[in-house]
Structure formats: structure tokens, C-alpha cells
Amino acid sequence: MTLPKFEYLAPTTLAEACALLAKHQEKARVLAGGTDLVPQMKKRAATPQYVIGLKNVSGLDYIEFDKTKGLRIGALATLNAVLDSPVVKSNYPVLAEAIGRMATVQVRNLGTVGGNLCNASPAADSGTPLLVLDARMKVTGPKGERTIPLEAFFKCPGQCTMEPGEILTEIQVPPPPPKSGAVFLKLARTKDGICQEARIALGSVAPTPMRAHKAEEMLKGKKLDSALIEKAALAASQEARPISDIRSSAEYRVEMVKVLTRNGLTQAMERAKAG
Ligand SMILES: Cc1cc2nc3c(=O)[nH]c(=O)nc-3n(C[C@H](O)[C@H](O)[C@H](O)COP(=O)(O)OP(=O)(O)OC[C@H]3O[C@@H](n4cnc5c(N)ncnc54)[C@H](O)[C@@H]3O)c2cc1C
Image (cartoon, rainbow, N blue to C red):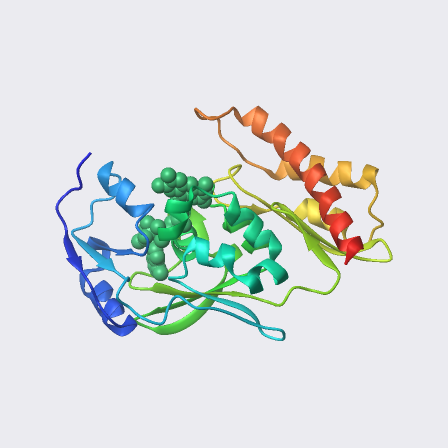
């Protein structure tokens, strides 16, 4: 499959990239690693006249951690850079765990976490851990800078809530709460076995990556035991809104939400107990 015709623009600063995007508006698309956009262009699912490559914009590939402020991931940090980052591994293992299960080494060397989120696929693998970790997205555009909670960032499949002309510059993750444990899909915080706070994020079972708020509420303030975990897992499966497609039926996905939520909560509880 060949690429459709387009003009490649290579700004060297963020301001230049924003100006180009503002100028060409919906005729243009930003390109980070290209591992989502290029296949979409080959399939003609995206046919931008202008592709604005961010590769030459320096200073956007940082991964920085501060104990009080948390983690900052520049929009051009590759998936493998985040996966291999010692500060991510030790402070946010759930993020490394999720990215480690993504794609292949080659794709992860090119693809970025920013691109994964901006692509807004319901199955974006970095979406669920970052939802659980309460991440925020820093964007810059014609009206200046703003941050958007990740939960409000996904609009519908393939679309996020950035305004036209806005570019994602940074993903911000608050410091991990003490005595917290998370697995790929879920996180629970406990004190003396009492769950103080729980976050459950689900991918591939709704139009966007989603939080299972009703199931989370069931766990808060209660002692976690297998009966309560079972009830929360059922609630999470009832909150999911999957479709049937070539990969599996909606009924199967609902059942799997129950199974994975149950397993995930059990593992998260064990990790939280271990500190
Ligand atoms: C073989 C293969 C396997 C894959 N497996 C997985 C998988 O297991 N799990 C998974 O989640 N994904 C998977 N992907 C999808 C893809 O690799 C990831 O989503 C990747 O993180 C996309 O990042 P990118 O930098 O390549 O994005 P790009 O392709 O560069 O961009 C994706 C979208 O985001 C926009 N965008 C990118 N950066 C910005 C920015 N800074 N500001 C505004 N908009 C921006 C682009 O305009 C485009 O619409 C796979 C892809 C391939 C080809």
C-alpha cells in the first residue's frame, strides 16, 4: 500500500509547529513516531495534505521525576524510553508493565506515549494505566497552554478533546500515593486492609479507555475480601460498553472484564499490602 500525496513540514520549534497547525488547520496532521498515522494514511483512513513532523523539535523527549511533583513525560518520549526509564520502573511500574506489553521493540522505538494517547484508540494500552494514575495532558495552542485531565481527554474513538491547532507537549503524572499498588488494569490503596481509594480503568471495552467509577465506589472505605472484589468485578463488567467485532463478541468482553477486574484487584491488593 502506498502513501497518498502530502507535503511534509519539519518545524524546529514548538511555536513554529503550532503556527503551521493553526495555518493549515484540519488539512494538517501532527506526526510523532508515525506508527499510527502512517498505517492510517496507507489505508486512506487519514488523508492530510500537510504532515507536520515533530521529530526536529528538540527538548520534547524528556522523562523527569520529582518526589513532590511527580512524573513529566515529554510528548516525544518514545514508548521504549518510558519503558526503560528507571524512574518509571521504580515509581510507576504499572505504566512500564502496560508499555512492555505493547507492540514490538521496533514499533516501541518509534512510537510515543503522546501519540498513543492522541490517537485516542479505545485500545490504547498506555491509556488505562495513566487513567488509574490520574494523569493530566499539557497542551499548547493558539490560546496558550492548558492542562486537561486524561479522563476528559478522550472524546470518542479516534478523537480527543484538544482544540484545533493544539499540540500535546507533556504528560503529567502525580506522585504515587504511599502504600499503593497497581496492576495493568486496576489500582487500590489500603490502610489496615481498608481500601481508602480505588481506581479501575478498562481498555478495549468502550468507545474510549474508561474508568469503572461505580465499581470503584463499592470498594472505598471497605475491607477488601473476595466477596467484595467479586461484587466490584461484576459492577465493572456492567459498566463496560463493548462492541462485537472480528476479535471477540461483546458478551465475551463483558465476561472478561469481570474475570480480569477480579484478578487485577486481587493482585493490586497484594501489592498494596506489600507496600
Ligand atoms: C505493528 C503495530 C503494533 C501496535 N501495537 C500496539 C499495542 O499493542 N498497543 C497500543 O496501544 N498501540 C499499538 N500500536 C499503535 C501505535 O504504535 C501506538 O499507538 C503508538 O504509541 C503511537 O505513537 P506514535 O508516536 O507513533 O503516533 P503517531 O502515529 O505519530 O500519531 C498518532 C496520532 O496522534 C497525533 N499526535 C501524535 N503526537 C501528537 C502531539 N504531540 N500532539 C497532538 N497530536 C499528536 C497524530 O496526529 C496522530 O493522529 C501498534 C502499531 C503497530 C504498527
